Image (cartoon, rainbow over all chains, first blue to last red; front, side):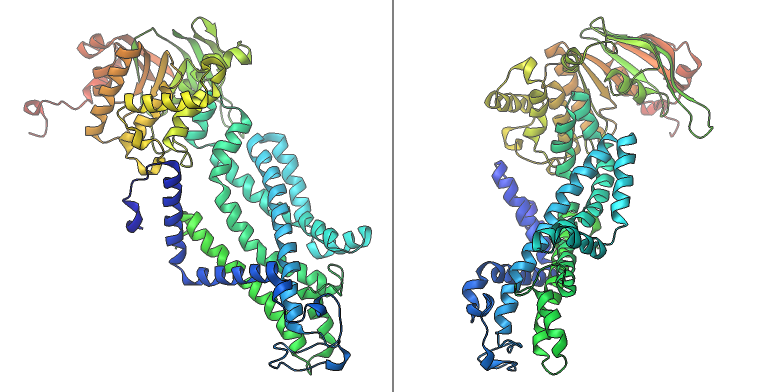
Length: 298
Length: 264
C-alpha cells in the first residue's frame, strides 16, 4: 500500500482514482481472486458475445443433426454432440447467457428489496422493525426450491416466474444483513452530527448510512451470485425453471442424465460450466471482501 | 442566548432496575460572546445535557431556551432554523466525520441542509467551504480529501469548519481537544479563541481538563452526578472553590510549576 499512499490527490477525481488504485492493489494481493475475476470475465464474454462465438449457432436455435448423434469430443466438436446431434460446446457457451442473466436478475432484485426492507426496519426501529423482521423470518423459512415449484404451479413455468420465485426466498438474507449494518451505523457520531444539524431521515440514510454499507452488500451479492446460478440450474434440472430447448446448464444436465455413463460428455461439460461459475463468483466475492471490507482481512 | 432551566432527564429502568436520573434540575446560561465551562467526570450528565441542548433528546422536566424560545414547543420549521444557530464540535474527530465524504462535502452539508435560511447555491457553497477551511488553517488542497487522509488535529479543524458553516451564535464544544496530542491541543484552543473574538461566538465548553477550562472560559459550572454543585466566574473557582467537589478537582490538578511538583 505504501506505493500509492504518499501521493496527494488534487481533485475529487484524482482522489477517487487513488482509492481505486489502492483497491486494485489489495485485490491483486490474492491470486485466487484474480483467477476468479478472470473466469467471471470469460463467462461474461461468453454470455454477451456467445451467439457470434459458437461454432454451430444453428444448434443453439434448436436445429438438429440426426446424422451426427453422440459423437465423442473431437477437433470438429470439442465437447462432442448430444442425442440430437447438436454441438455441446455451442449449447454450453449459449447457456452462459441464460444462467448469468437469471443469476444476476435474482441477486440484483433480492439486494434491492432486501436493502429497502432492512434499511427501513433498522432505521425506524420499534414496531416497524418488529413487523418487518418477523415477516422476513417467515420468508426465510420457505425453501426456495419448494417455493419455486409452487410459483411454477400457480403462474406457470418460465424464466421470469422462476426469477420471481427465487427472489421471493432470497431477499431476506439481504434484509437481515442491511438491518444489522444500519443499526450499527445509526449510532455513529457522524450520523448523530447530521441529526443535530437537522438532516432529514432520507438524507441521513442515503448520504451517511448507505454509502458506508454498500461494501458488505456488494460482497454478499457477489458471493450469492454463484449460489443463485446453482439454484437456477437446479430448477432447470428438475424441470420447473427454464424449459428445453432453451440451452441452460441445468436443462442440458437433466437431458444428458439418461445417457450416462456411455455418453459422458453430454453431462460433464454443462456440469463443469456450473462448477466453474459458482467457483469463480465465490473467489471474486472473497477478493472483493478483501478490497472493500478491510476489517475482515486475514 | 442559551438558557437551561431546571432540566431533569430520567431514563426509565429496564427489567425491574430502578430509573436512572442523568440530570437533576440543571440550570445554566451562556450569553453572547461568553465562554462557559461545564466540568464533570464521566457519567456526570455532561453528554446527556448536550444531547438535550441539540434536541436529540427530550428533557423529562425543565426548559431549554435559545434566544428566549423554548426548543420543546417550537414548530418543526422554526426548530430547523434554530438548529443552525446552535452547533456542536464533537470530542472524537475520528468518529464524527463520515469516512465516505470529502472535506468539501462535510463542510458544505450544513449549508445544504439550511439552504432555505442561508440561500447559497452550489458554487457559492464551494467558495464558502474554501473560505472556512482557510479560516481554520487548512488549504484548498485539502478540499477533496477524505477524513482518513488527515491527522487528528486537522480532522478537528474540519469539525470546527463544519460547525461554523451556518454562522451559528453558540457552539457546544464537547471536549474538543481531549482526543488530541498536547501540542495540537494548544493550537486548536488558540484557533477556538481567535474564532470567538472574530465572530462573537458563545461557547459552552465541556471538559474535564481544568487547565483547558481556565485558559478558555469566563464562567464555570461544575456538574456532579447530574447536579450543578458550583457555578461562578472562572477566577473565583480557581482562587477558592466553594464546593467539596470543586476543592477535590483543584486538588487533583497537576501543577505546571516543576518546583512544586510532588515528583521532585
